[in-house]
Every structure is written in structure tokens, then in C-alpha cells.
Amino acid sequence: MDEHLRREPVVETEVNQPAPMVLPIDRIHPYERNPRQGNNPEYDRIKASIRATGLDQPLTITQRPGADDYIVHSGGNTRLRVLKSLYEETGEARYATVACLFKPWHCESEVLLAHLRENDLRGGLTFIDKARAILEIKRLLETECQIEELSQRRLESALQQGGYALSSGLVSRMGYAVQTLLPLIPQALHAGLGRPQVQKIRALERAARQVWQSHELGADTTFDPVFAALCQRYDDPDWDTELLRNALESEIAEQADVSVHLIRMELDARIEGRAVMIPPPEEDPDLDEDDVDWLDKPPANTKFDSPVSLAPEPGKRQDQPLADCSPDSDISEDPDVDPVAEALPDNEVGIAPASNDFEFPDTTILDEAPAGVGVAGSADLKSLRARAWTLASRMAQRNGLSDLVLPLSRQGLGFTLRDVPDPALADQLDEATLSQLSLIWWQLAACAELTVAPAASILPHLPTESVLRQALEQQDPARLFDSVWTLDPGQTGHRLWRRLGDRDWMDLLNLMDCYRRMHHLAEERQLDLWAAP
Image 1 (cartoon, rainbow, N blue to C red):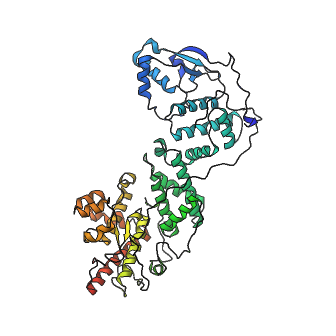
Image 2: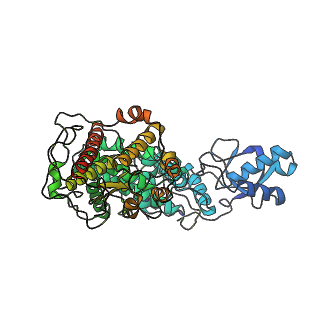
Image 3: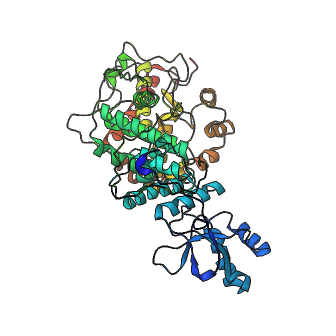
């Protein structure tokens, strides 16, 4: 135990023993720093019990120096509230006074720790409630001991002396939860987001920051607002870290102008502590070498919008003072210690061929013609399909739909959609964002001829549980329209075309042009685009 935080052992004499007292109910007040921030879910049960049998054990109270009244010393705020409520409701004499045990005042940090210890033992404290209490204890100790900064190791030692053992790594995560996450995701934290989820978010932020820097997208000051905006977007009592991860992947891919699949692989490696293998810029993991030449490259003077993408122990108890707060205490700073965070689950979402027989063009390169020109130059159907898949995939990556695009290399228009967007997005996105995402889905569906193609050609590629599959099997368009927000087509320009960033707009125009070329080519050569290969 650190000598600077050691106190002389408390000798159990009559002077130190809590003294029994009976006080008027209005002379006792709740402890205003009580760690429990919300209502106690046991309030009604406790009230019924006290009404039926009375207070089963006296309140432990203390008195601040110079104060006339008393405060609850170690737990009991809920019981005090119940007693005051019953007295106000009934006026019965049995609630007018309260049996108490008086403990002499020592210091504020000791009282707060006593409340934390009691609340935690009784259960029901959220992780953020505990974290806020720990940081408040740290602040109180620094004031009481006249220390500018109490290191985490010394705080760990002081907490252990007070009967509340925490590792320095856990203290570090608590600090992260309060200082970084609480301003961004208060709903999720107050709803019970726990230590494992906080640890995953922290690991994800660190890894994403490293990926951001590895692609030279700017300093921390440019990453921080992106991370903050995405956290705030997905703040919800039903928090899902994967939504945040997908959004970070898409945003970094957008800013770096690389495949989201590349970012996902790099993020996985950094989270898991593996070596990061980044292919040369021209080698996109989603593309074969020969595909690179016919990817659309924006003009050098094009200015892009850069919005945030949718992408979608308590220890053993002991009643000894907490710390030696003599003014000459000398507590040196220790580095923050935090164990390596556990790896996030593997993210299976991504753009991948539906089968092993998918082939990219290896000889014929599509002519780079302006969007909307029609059939320009000679391009074979195989190249056109591959290009359509690439364009659709890029749009999907930037708009949170990357897991829905599947390639069709030997029939159709080069790709299809595996399902409708996640219905949870309707509750998580604002109207403007949801309308844009929905319209993009319908644009992709149109370019894939989703609702006019032979169902037999599409169904084998769709998962059994897919809403889209069920709608096609049952020939029930209403099921599809109920699952994807279907706006008045007249709103497409207002809600989609004028809002799209330049990259998405170019890809959409080229995708529609590619669709036209395939049909013109099929008509020219009397081919059935949907014929079985």
C-alpha cells in the first residue's frame, strides 16, 4: 500500500462506534452526490415493505462540519425518500422520527465511496453511474489532498483501502466512458451499456484513428468530429456497436477513396493486433488487376462533398478511512494503464461474390464515355456486367448498403440486391437521411431490374430469410413497398439527385448508362440478358 495514501488504522473504541440516535425526519437529507442517477427500480417494493413492517434497519447518517442537519452516510437514500413520502401522505407519527446510527464526519470522498459501495452491493447501478462516482471520488481526493493530478495507480490503491477494489485498466475505461462517451451517447449509457461494450467502442475508436492516420486523412482534430458525429447518430437505448463500425468504415473509405473492404481488413488487423498488410493503391481487394483501368476516375478539379456517411467487483468491505490527505503528500504521476481491448467480432458484412465462379473481364476494357451517351465503342456483355456491379457496389458502400449488393457475372445486369435495408434504420435516421437511403436502394433495384426480372433467376441468390425473397416468391409487391420507404417518384430529384455528393452522382449516371448499354447490346445481338448461363 502506498505510504502517502496510508492512514493509521481505525481503532474500534466507543468514540469511533456509530452512535444510536432518533431524529425528526425533516432533519435528515439525502446525499446529493448519490451515485445512483436514476430512480431505484426497487422503490415501490421498499415502500410497500416499510409501510407494512416499518424500517428494518436504522439509517446511517453523518453531519458536515458547521451544518445543523444531517445527511445519509452510506446508502439509504431510497429508504429516506420512502419515509418522507409516507409521512407526507399519511401524517402518521411512526414516520415522523427515524432511528439512526451517527458516524462522525471525516471527509467528502469517504462518504461518496461509502454510498458507492452500498449501492453496488445492493445491485442495480449502471456502469456509467459507477464510472461517474469513481471520477468524482478522484476529483474530491485531489482537492482534499491538495494534489494536482492523482494517478490511476494511486487512485486504485486509495479505492482498495476504502473497500472498493478496481484495476487501473477498469478505472481507465471508466474515465473513457465519462469523459469521451457520455457527451456522445448518453441514451445508450444510461440504458445500461456495460463495460464490455465500452471496451469494444474504445478499441474501435483507437483502431479507426490509426487507419485514418495511415491513409493520411488528417490529424486527430479531423478524426474527432467524425467519430463524435457518428456516435451521436447511433445513440440509442438499444446500442449496436456494429452500426458505428460500419459507418466508420464507410466514412474512412469515402475520405480515402478506397474500397470499404480494404478499410475493413485493415481495421480488423489493428483491432486484433495483427500486422497490417495494405496493398498498393491501385490494387483494390474488390477488383482484379484488369478492372482498375475502367473504374471511373473523377476529373482532377472536381470538388466533392464530404458528409459523414450513412453506412449505417466490489472488493471486500472495510470501514477504514480512504486516504491520507496531508498537504505534503507527494503522489507522482503514473502512465495510464489499460489492457489490450478484446477484439471486436469479425464483421461478415461486405461485398463478396455470391459464388466462386464470378469472373472479371480480363481482355476487353470498357470505353470511357461520358455518362448518358448511350452505346459508345464496343464493349462485351461480360465487361458491362462487371462494371455495373462495381458502380453499384461503390454507391452501396458510401450509403450503408454494402452488404446488400451481390454480383451476377453471367446473367442479368451484373448485380442484384439480396434484401431490403435494415428496418431498424427507420428509427435511427432522420427523414432526410432515410429518404436518401431509400431512394438509392430503389435506384439500385431499378438498375438491377429487381421487380421485372424472372424471379427464378434471382431467388437462388437470396437468403431464405430475406424479405425481398419472400416478396418475390409470393408475388407480393405490397410486402416490398411496406419494407422500403417508397416515395412519390416526383420527389426523386428533390430528395436524391440534388443531395447526392459528386461521386455518388457520377456513379449513378454511369450505372444508368451501363444499364442502357447492356440492353442495347442485347437487342443488337438478339440476346436474352436473363437466360441461364
